[in-house]
Length: 331
Ligand code: SAM
Ligand code: SF4
Image 1 (cartoon, helix red, strand yellow):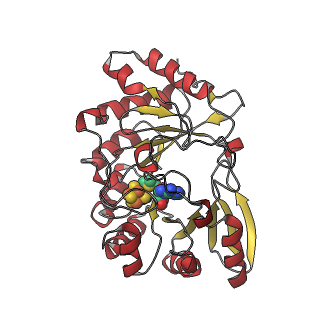
Image 2 (tube, rainbow, N blue to C red):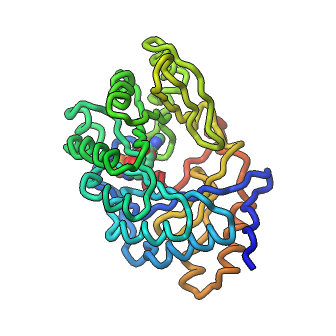
């Protein structure tokens, strides 16, 4: 007889239904707020979970723990070989699948990913200017990103959401243009406050463009009507009055949404994290490779959630940046 899985609940009563899976820590860009120009010490291939291992963990998560949505990320997830086949296997488990990507290579793969069961994509794009794109990402690939977003939209991976991280003195003067670009092409714009998750440890609070500042900029141009938040979604949304255009703001630092967090994260090397900012992890890969059965995997997963903290405390003096950067955790 089929029984509904017991929810993955923590000691604050938060129920976890969303899983972020990092498919690789590697990337073909070097965004300045994410990693250094020379890249990082990438994980050896043997340490990265195989497709079979990822499928097994997601099967446990969906079948026993109540995970319903899975977002594939990285590093750059499109660098993972055979991605459409993996997507098809994960979609067959009944979870709703989305992907966060820098968009490079998406023009080639969007159709296959859609056919395999992927539902939506978020594409990261911080500027519309080629010269500035090269400065931010240290690569000359802006046209590939534009092509990727259009292909995703045309393949039905809708709505395509654009994620931008505004940084003071770098691209904060472009937020209106980015929002207009998104509206013109049928994409949905979201701005993300920069977080202390760069590999270099160079995050500087004074360079972060806060939600308040962003809204002041956008509000000077348009009449914004608050839409609120969809469920536990990290983005708060505003609609441009008299239009269908919705703009999202993810204010992880200045307006943390930890109280409604429903997310758990699996790194490319099989470490389970209960928070982006967690300083501890559970080694699920060791369990799998040591021959653990699904009961043991389930117990480890529940233990990890049971010790989840109330919030990230970036604002407090005790805040400690996690050892892994965003690209290695899976943003
Ligand atoms: N490579 C893919 C991409 O760029 O979309 C997926 C991984 S990336 C780590 C996921 C998201 O994290 C991107 O939207 C990126 O802009 C964002 N990100 C990276 N470093 C960040 C930071 N220090 N603060 C805030 N967002 C960051
Ligand atoms: Fe790569 Fe994404 Fe980090 Fe940019 S933000 S370097 S695209 S992982």
